[in-house]
Length: 410
Image 1 (cartoon, rainbow, N blue to C red):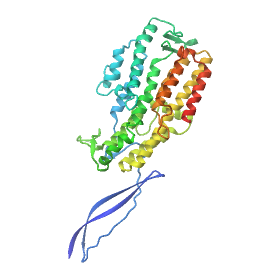
Image 2 (cartoon, rainbow, N blue to C red):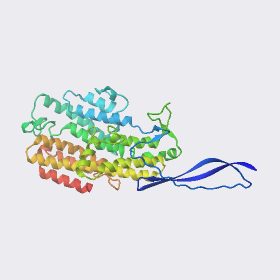
Image 3 (cartoon, rainbow, N blue to C red):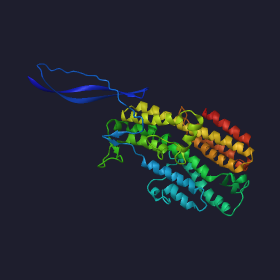
Image 4 (cartoon, helix red, strand yellow):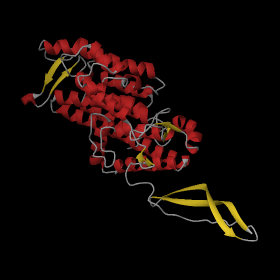
């Protein structure tokens, strides 16, 4: 008797991840077997296949087309660079900067004008969203209302007086407010936490379980929610979870090389990841990039435990960038103060101020920030006490750096 027998052969595929991780996925494969038999026989075959997975670079495809894209993140990172420049331009207006920040319009590079903006992504996941966002708006107003008029009128900065402060020989010239704040530095360095980290690692951010877990079922079932930029004809071919992870990747690497990051690109987190990676010699950049790759591979393999493990690595390592720089800028500013280089000191202190502000958006191994919102603001109040940066001493700044070192464990 000739039988056409439809057999379901459970095929266990072991996917070797690097040399340390293993992702196991069971799938059912339909196979048509034609035999001449007198008795029906069902045979189960188990096979182990080793493949190059995850890939060595952040590149993932489906049917030969890339499923990775993060164009919105690249646009916003470029907008942040333009905002930093506007916060140092004496022709800027409050309305003009706010238009760029909150509306995504008014950029001289017209390719940046559109539906993307930085303001609505600033401190968006923070429990203190409204007050944190208001601080950025206040820094814009302070620069336009107080710093610009003083510098335009050639006023020399002094304790309690906004203007221009310069070091001997023109080594450094900075535009500061009455407290010695260089507004574009405070603004841009605070974005590293309130914008970069908040979007990537904070609760509700792209790598958080709060964002990813609700789409577990869709990812497992291959439900596509996005259309990749290479899809021709245009049709959804990327799951929501895949794209969320890629957007988190984009907030760090959006101006960099996707396949071999060079680092130091733009003015935000990528730029300082390079600095910390070079100075601290802890291999932080490789850890972060590899975790992004393995986490994305885990999503493709529907291994959500492994995904979350990689997200945790990214959260911990990226937070170190902010912790290290908060300390280093305080100590370098103290050295400049002692040597009488106020312009250099105020520049470093303004950067340090922004990094301290950003500490509330970090996460340690327990998922807690290095410093809470309240602790951050107490530290900033100490920096601003009396005449602000004009009043600070090297001993005070070194003490603050030591407190941050204790809080971060770095």
